[in-house]
Image 1 (tube, rainbow, N blue to C red):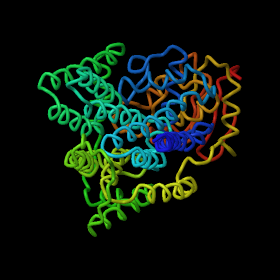
Image 2 (image 1 turned 180 degrees about the horizontal axis):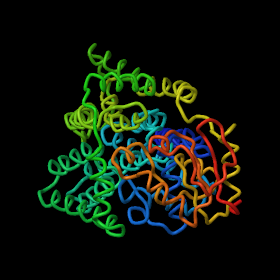
Image 3 (image 1 turned 180 degrees about the vertical axis):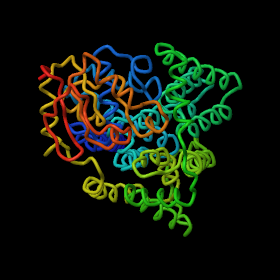
Image 4 (image 1 turned 45 degrees about the vertical axis):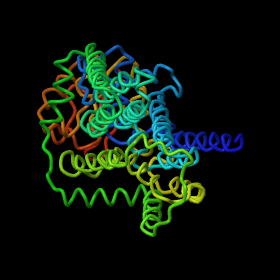
Length: 462
C-alpha cells in the first residue's frame, strides 16, 4: 500500500514537474512570444506605472486576466519576465486539474498518466506558455468541474465553489469556456438538489460582478464583449476541421497514439480492471458532451485559425479523460509517455528561450536608453517591453483587429506621439503602414532605419 501510494505521489509530482519544465524556456525568453504576448506584457508594464485596464488603456480580455497576471508580476520572480510566472503556475494548475478529474474515476497511476498528457500537451502549452488568458480560464474551469463532481450531500459548499470558479473563468475568457461551464452546471443538477444549482449560478454571477466592478461594467462590456462580437468571422467548417486536424497531429501526437491504441483494444474487447473502486463521478456521456460542444464551438463559432491554435487547447482535457476510459494498461501507457516527453520537448514551439537579435536587438537597446517614466509609441509593443520601457496607453494594443474595427486610428497614433511624455516612435511591423503612417512625426529624429522599419526619438529624450 505504501509503495503504491509513493508511486502515485511520484507520478503526480513528475507530471507537475513536466508542466513547469515545459514552460521554463518561455519564462526565460526576453523576446515576445507572439504579438498578443507582447501586448499583455506591455499592459502589465502600464499597470506597474499605475494605469488601469479598461479605464486607462484598452483591454480585450476578461476583467480578471490582467489583474491575475499582475499579481504574479508583483511577486517579482524574474524581474522583467515576472508576468510569465503566471503561466508557469497556470500550466501546473491545468495538469493538477486533469489529475483530480481522472482520479475520480480511476486509480492514481492512471490519474498521473492523464496529468502527464496534460503537462506535455503542445496545445495546452500554447494556451499557457506565452501570456494568454485561455490557460487561466481553463484551469479555473477544470477545478470547477472537480468541485461539481464532489459529494454535495456532505459538502454543501462545493456548489458555490464550483460556481465561483466558473464565474472567475468566464471573467477571464468567456466564449471558449462556455461548454465547460454548461457541463459544470449539468453535473451539479445531476448530483445535487436544485438549491445547489441556484447557489452555483448565483455564485458565478457574484464572482463575475466582483472582479468587473473595479474597472466599470460599461467599459468591460464594450472592450471584452462588444469588441469580440463585432469582429468578422470566417465561416468555413471544412477548413476549420482541416486546421484542427493539422494542429492535433503537430502538437498532440502522443495523445493521438494513446487514443488510437486504447480504441483498438476496446474494439478488440480487451477489458482489464482499470481501477479497484470505480466511482463514475463523471459520466462518460457528459465528457463526450463537453468535447462535442467544444468542437462545435471551434468549428462553427470561433473558428480555428493559424496563430490561434491555442483555442484548441480547450478540447484537450476531455480528450484525455476519454482516453483514460479505454482499456489501455496504465503501466504500458506511462512507459510510452515517459518516452514521448523528450519527443514533445524537441518538437513543440517555445522550447528554447528566445532573445532579440539583429536589427530588433539594436532597436531594443536604443529604446532602453530613454527615461523609465516616458512612453514609446510602437506598432510592436513587445519590443518596448523587452527594453523594459512603457508603451503609450493609447497604442499598447494596435492589433489588426483594433485597426479594422476603427478603435485605433492614425489620429490616435499622432496624438500619442504628440504627448509630452512620449520619447520614442517605433515602426517595426506593418501596422502603422496599414494606418497610412509611413514616417515618424516631424519633430522626431530617426536614429535607426532599415527599409520600412525605423526608430525615432524626440530631441533630448536619450
